[in-house]
Image (cartoon, rainbow, N blue to C red; front, side):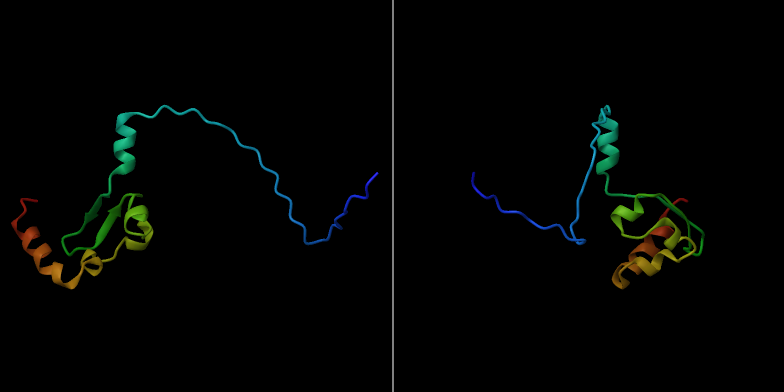
Length: 94
């Protein structure tokens, strides 16, 4: 018989053991549309402070809803866009 090489075990050896479970979920046209939308909803006070933001802001803008709550929305706009946003808000019917 041939001598087979042996490997000595050390305390630095890492072993990964995992289990995968296949989950069957029905994908509907609506769920695909919602997952791919690159928009989120915010609600603001008259002075521009954000009082609500949905969870999609984290994926799109990189902020958690809690991080932007109470912060003026104009802080997140490019300075060249602020005047356009103010003009649009003044012309809106809301």
